[in-house]
Image (cartoon, rainbow, N blue to C red):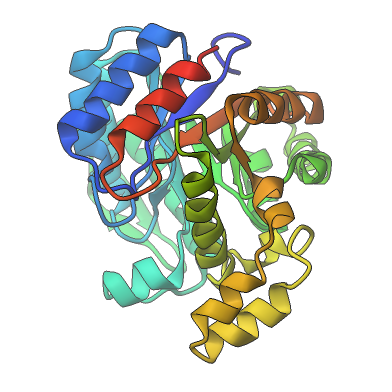
Length: 330
C-alpha cells in the first residue's frame, strides 16, 4: 500500500531532459510532498542509473521504475540493479516491470517480442527467485537461468509492480505482484480493471487490498496550456497506434479505427484530426484544477496511488514540468 494518502509523480522521460534536470524534479517532488517518484524507460534516460542518482539526492520519497521492459534487461541483471538500489535507499525502492511493445523490444533492441504473457510471468518468477538470494535453476518455456546467485542481499523487501494494460496482465498482477500499474486508463474504466486484479488475488489466496493499484496520467499546469494540449494530442495518437496499447483507447476514442486506418496509410495529419479534445481530456489533464480533479477521480474510482506525469510542451521544456510538479503538489 502507498506510504500515505497523497500521490506520486513520474519523470517525463520522453522530453529529452538532462540528468540534472531530472534530478531537480526528484528533489522538488520530495520537498513538495509527493510520496512516490517513478521513472520509465523509452529511448532517453536509463532508468536504473537515474534512480541511483536520485537515491543519493533524496532521503524520503519512494523511488520506482514505472515501467521497465522485461525483454531488454535479463531478470538476474535486473535483480542486481534493484538490490544495489535497495542497498542505497533501503525501504524506498519499487521494481516495476512490463512487457513493453514490439516497437521498443523488436524494432529498437532487436529482440523477438514473443509470447509477452508467458515471458512476463516467467520473468517475475525468475526475478523473485534471484532477489531471494538462492542459487537458481530455472528452465521455463521462454526464459532460463542456471547457477546464478545474487551476491548482494537487499536490506529491505523490494515490492514488484506489473504494468498491466490487458485483462491477462491485470490478472497476473493480482495473482503474483505487489502492485498493478495502469496507464492510459480513464477513471470510468478503473472499476472493471480493479475487479480483475482483486478476483485474481482472491483466487491466488491473497488479500486483494494488498495489491497496490497505481495509475499514471499526463498532466500539465504550466504557463502554456494550449501548447501542452497539442503535445498531449500527438502523444495520445502515438500511443493509441501501438498495437499492444490500442485496446486501452477503445472506450474513449470514438474515431480510433479511422485514425488507425489513416496512420497505416501514412496520413498522420488525418489521424491526428481524429483525436478531439474529449479524447485528450479522457486520459490527460490540462490545468491545475483539472490535474487535481483527475487525482480525486482516480481515488474515488479505487486507485491507491495516482501518478502524475508532468509533461513539458516541447523537448527540453523542464520549466513546464517543474511548474506542474510545484503547482499540483499534494
